[in-house]
Image 1: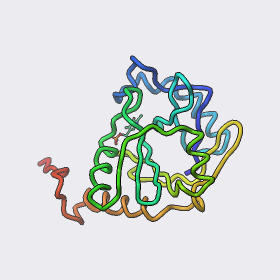
Image 2: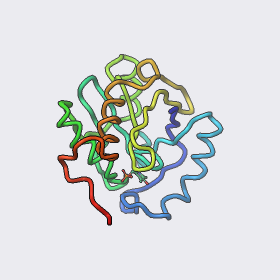
Image 3: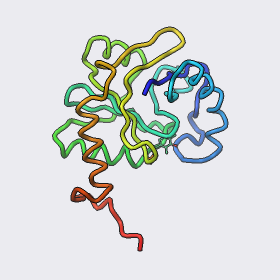
Image 4: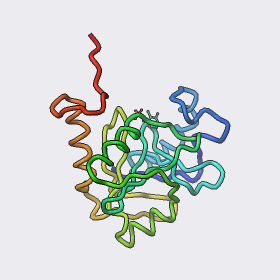
Length: 181
Ligand SMILES: *Cc1c(COP(=O)(O)O)cnc(C)c1O
């Protein structure tokens, strides 16, 4: 995916409803989505409403940043959705031998770390999109590539393990799977 970091619009504010999945959050996102499409991007990356600097999440998915074998996902500040896929991957990643932590990450850090090669992969995660690699980022001023722009090995490993548990092909030591009949 190529993603658009939205500076002109914000999805949620402190004291608002950003941490829940409610229809009221979506109306205000449409203009940014149109802007993103016009820029040739697939998804909008939402930044914090106050400074438009801290990365929060995407429209229907959370974000993970991969630094070699260390994974980072933005902290739950109340303005992003605490996705179940995000929580599951934090747990799964630890058990697969990755270091996984919740920490703030800014757009500047994203750009600088990708440029320096420290940030090796970025992916989004959510029920609808599973684990999806992000290869390129665009803002109003510039754009940059993560790694070689193609799906990375940590992303694809997590995707495979996670989807394996979901499909029942792999054992589920977490109790995530439930019989519904
Ligand atoms: C649904 C959604 C997510 C992902 O949540 P899951 O529980 O993993 O599906 C992330 N952000 C937003 C804004 C969402 O609507």
